[in-house]
Image 1 (cartoon, rainbow, N blue to C red):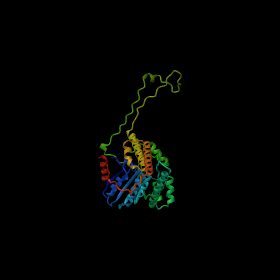
Image 2: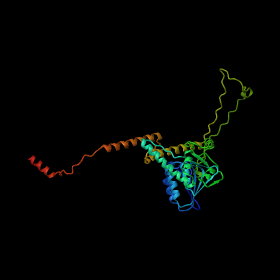
Image 3: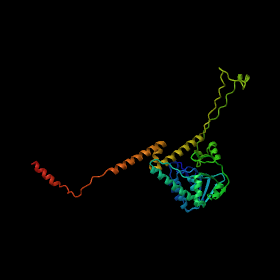
Image 4: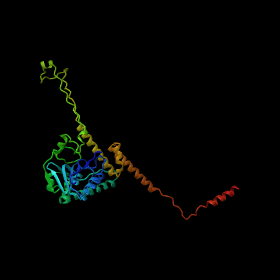
Length: 352
């Protein structure tokens, strides 16, 4: 099964890789935490290249790393955005290549329901933000007001800026950057990064399968253009000649369509990740995480997921209302017990 994280044994300790959306592929943080518990108090290297993901999963991972006895070095190999940036704060040392980025912004969520439900969601988001602020403060020593302002502005920090703010400890040589993640979820991505995401070819999977199992991309070759007829070469048409009524312009030569299957697969993968993440978030907000697997297995559209959750909520509310209105009849415990023997005796006398 494909995962958004990986654990790799090393000579001293282990290396943990988070190179995808946290909580993706239907795998919650529990699987991550189970593997983390199995590690002894050795050195840990955590490598991050993630756009974020589930806030609840990310908070659980951050807390587990902070409680762990190992010395933790975090490498931000590309982007540590949203809740992934909070996870990075669990490191005793945070190292960023010169062109890596740390992204801080307010948590967000979806809710459907009454005004009370929406107020409850707003309070939950405030509590989530307070926890994130505390993590950034513990690492940097900065004031809460300054950190809250950075989050509200959706701040994209370079490695040097992160070091100056105390959110990272060291700047390393730049690495090759690739636009691997969908940046449409962010309000304020740097123009150069947005251009890279729009123009660059997607990078290979961060945790690829062995070469012998990897399919070879199929690209249809371009067809050579048809040779121009001899007669056309003898009397070429002037370039400035106008096309009058009744005459036909030269039809454009057909060109072969080149299909890059890597691009197709990357687009499909991004769409799948976005779909799975949204279903998880909608079900979590409705308090029905038990329904996630069923919706994903049936590839239920997100709009239909919301509709089903609303209908289930309405049915639950109606059942609760009915139960509250039903009153059981009072039982008079002072009434004597029924004498069955007397009833049968009287009936026998009447029969005679």
